[in-house]
Length: 362
Image (tube, rainbow, N blue to C red; front, top):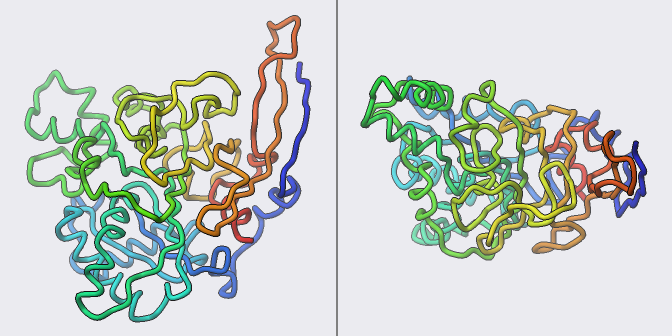
């Protein structure tokens, strides 16, 4: 039995539902009036077959975003996953940062959209790009905000396991090896893990961790990937690849169940095992219990989104997702009003990426 008490803020549910059918044109390749720069995530195929040249890296980056974000961006920073963040990846990324500066794409401030390991790569770039560019007499990029979709800036326990298996390939590790192979696409060896080394939880959490004035907006899923075989090996809740502690921007790698201490990934308003603290200027914006690691950036629908940080302005960017609260009583609850939930109304009719794009593009 359901007793609903609706409360909508700022955006209407109807506009959200209809927005799912819209396609961006060249004139719409901005977000809130600012150019968008994309930074993709980990590509397992680079570990089994290293890209032959930068052209292959760029083509893979284009394909990565094709499902939703490609035609909503003015630029990309592409990189090969067989490298390390502070090594070859930084070199590849800087050449593109240099071009973005020369083209003036961020003269009126850019919004950077990352997915997965792109969170970690971007963090390293943000800490160093001004110094790198100024050394060549170039203008540092002006970044208004970064939107991290399923961000892996805090690492993942799957990377810890991959490195462990690379040095201890024993038969009794078979279940772990299957999860690692689903994540990496290879049988790990000490010399073939590339950026997976940087995704180890302790390594990621000690890489370019200086505080930033640029807000990091976090969008978090809790669904399954790879048929669920990776979930038993990740601390707390996760999206099948990245643990919630990483995606939320929590300051520690302990297993948590939500980005909030008072709202679950499903939107239930109750005490939660949330983060003890968040990195400076990190803001969990939306959570979705059903969205898996890829769904956060793609066009998958059918998943309810839950607002966390909402109805605020971050560095001039207005965060104003519609929301409603309602009470739901389980079949076995014979009295009382049931449990309280909060959600973005009709968010299951569109993808999380489309929801954030249409809402924040104001």
